[in-house]
Length: 192
Length: 423
Image 1 (tube, each protein chain N blue to C red):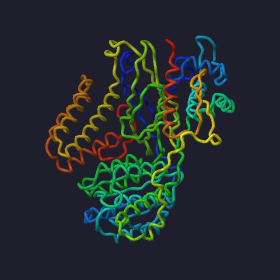
Image 2: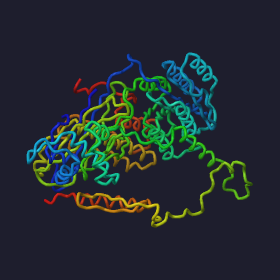
Image 3: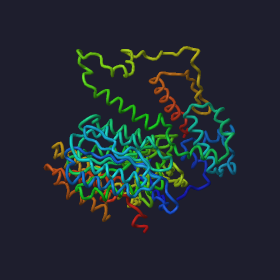
Image 4: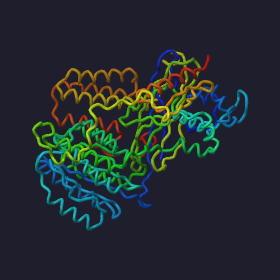
């Protein structure tokens, strides 16, 4: 069953996990083009589907709605499709060769004898080892200094926003992610 | 090339969580060899520890010779041998006639000795591949061993992590375990995380066939880094029962199928979990296919489910092909679990693992012949696991299950062509 090119509002909502109300809001805000027809029999196409998915994707990156709109305006359907369908090769943090060098160097250091004997004199190898980290790593500051931080607006649903001052500690960031997920789920429930 | 997606049942329950299964079947496009193929970049990593002595090392060397004979001038290969010491016998080189001759001469000087630093031997092989990564072709390290990792990095989890990291950086790993003494859990984990294949070679005589077959598959790879992508509404859980790795990206669940060779047929079984909902409502997912070079470009397939009464749910039709695929995977998982329990001497638990799975499949088997034979097969095997099994039987049962779950033939090779039903 290949994908059909026409969806009802409910179809589109089911497929993207965005409520019909929000979809209508996006149309009103110009984030989505108007449906083929208006009223209860309105039909939406694969362009709508792709755009909605991109909106969700960008929201997950916490972009404000205005920014999302600006980005969508600059893209035609094909470009949107290409972004959401992009085969997602992960950004490679360093090449395979670098990675292997790192692993082999580490395993050789670990294999080196006498690392734990007190009496062992300093060996030349120790010089090539990375500097020891401080005994206890200083925790990141609770609230980063004002000059380096910035407020992010996270749109939870069309009428509700969350403001977050970044950067956050990793732990707090995780919690905020959860708050956003829970809040979106709660706020997007259809009042039925 | 074909891509089909179906579900076992189309109705879900409004007042309970429902589990539904989805079977995605991919048949890769035909070979592109007539039009020239992208070059491959391989490393052969050979265990030459004492236990490999005799036939095993002789046949393994012969298999490498036969494999490099199949390469073109544009392909690359390297040969690394290891015991407690690692030797790069042939550094990554283009597979010219001269290079191949030199390799054969150097291989002939290698004898077996010492213990096994599998981890570093394998990594050094990967290093050779990584040094000359091919942008279009397959970059793979092939590790052949009959022993355990007992020197250097020996932790399975750590080695599997390295395999996964290397794969994301373009180097995949295939493993061949020979005889009774290798660690199949480690070799399967390396291949699964490394995006290659795991082979069990019970008798050294089969080394050449399987090694050259694996090399042949890399030569005929028609789609790299194939992904099954599932887009589901919030609240619908997506989980792969097939042993492929999964990840969440861009709001989708991606099941990493890996490289597909010409005409290869692969099945992926998913379990979806639906929350309760209102009678008459419907929900759906889109299952799509993607790959690194965009050769499988396929529109997504839309599947829909409807919330219906319990009565309608109980009476609904089932897609038996999906049921069978699900049952085969659960049976294979139970066998691997039973092998592991048998090895540690927990025979009761091993028997229980088999029995519980048989019971579960029986519940939905109905009169379906194939499902019943899966149940009968499990019940007939139950007795094997209640006493210490010979190591070879354990390895065979483990490998057969691994092949089943990964859509490989009974000897571990790729399965090609349309599914028997459509043919």
